[in-house]
Image 1: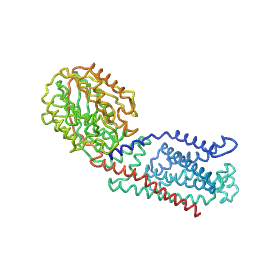
Image 2: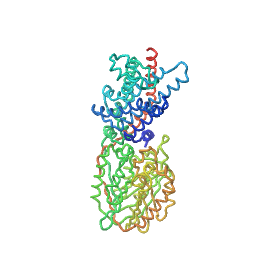
Image 3: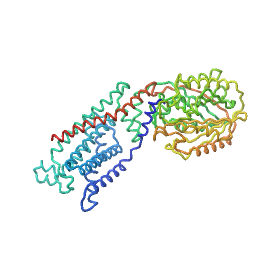
Length: 618
């Protein structure tokens, strides 16, 4: 990927899963009780805790329960989990602002309780603005419509303040109404002292903040509409849905910006003489991204589930421009792979494994009949994705001397992270691209002229004790060993996204029992729901990886038996991110992240200044 795409991928660090609504609500009530104990000073600590729960936790609870109901009645899609999490965040914002105000009031002689009251009003207006921003993004409401559910937490807190601070006593003349709607004697004195004019000021500040939110969104949205023809709110809505609850709303955004592409889907199947499939390599020339299970992020697992034998879904020569926009596109890929599988012609003859080195490129492969499996790596040099055009050209070079179908794998097995300007993306015209082209031509010639013999194959796999958080996906580690005329070639596939520098060489040097070996990763993006850079060997001890692969190779060698193999390729028409769209998206998103923070800070400074002026003038 490019540097800008790397920055976009780094947004994965924000990914989390929203807790259930009852977990968030329990946390909110505990925090409210602790705040009450710290802020109030009655005779009993439990009374202080109850006052905190009532005055601080109740508005949060009301917002948690009512907001999703109101939002969905207005055509929105805010879930209870998201609504409760949003309410809890707003509660924490309010508590933080009041804590700072209380400390300032204590150390400053001229400021007193009125200053804390003023800050409370600003806090209530601030959480209204924050909720307004989120609701406009998540539910795509207009400003007036979004203001209704966005105001619930602020209104609930303001109503409680009006009743229990005694402010309603100034406007209620009926003694019975005063008895029920003016109850200052039931709360600590710190809460008393508001008057009706304070709530008029609160309403004015909320209107100002709402206008600021609207203007902020207009400014942020303009680059997206001019460059991509879509709204930034669509991206923000999908991203929030994905990071908070794992929804697929982000796919709708990607589908709007995507374009159709024709991609080869190549299948190499190995079966026993009786017809039972032993192993299947499936390689569509797409990229399994962009992150998590969005788009084609979970393609390797889906491929494995569709195969009868042990599946090997390595990484193709394609970058983020060829990310599938939705998971539905994976069904098209799998259907095309099944068509290729049905058209296979098997042969029990194959060549031994061969390896050539050209410049920085090292290519390993062998022929099965008139077809060939070829794996390219730039290790020990660090590299990332090989661009689609480079891969197609390399396949053509490999076929010059007579090969038919070529399953060309990007080993994706050495990278040093997402830092720096050069992330190792192999593009047309680069020296590395020509190394790969020339190497593919040489290897194709060797395989065409090489002697063939009876093919034997053995496989083994282990789910491993590691999880995606450790850099290894659900397919674990898989090994396929081909033996021809006593020569053994091992292909190791780790379900991860690239590897730590040097690990590939350590594995090859340590493992015995085979003559040639290459280590590949599937580039699964399941492991990137934690962080964008989560390579094999980064979180788990390399010695454990090497030991497990050594054991799997031994098991695969013990499993060797006569087989026959066949390869076929079909073309699939799918919707992908598209040429230059990924770069445009990455550049625009990165600009929004970098400039959005500064712009938001400027807006906050302006509206806070206006708030101060309002309090000074009133």
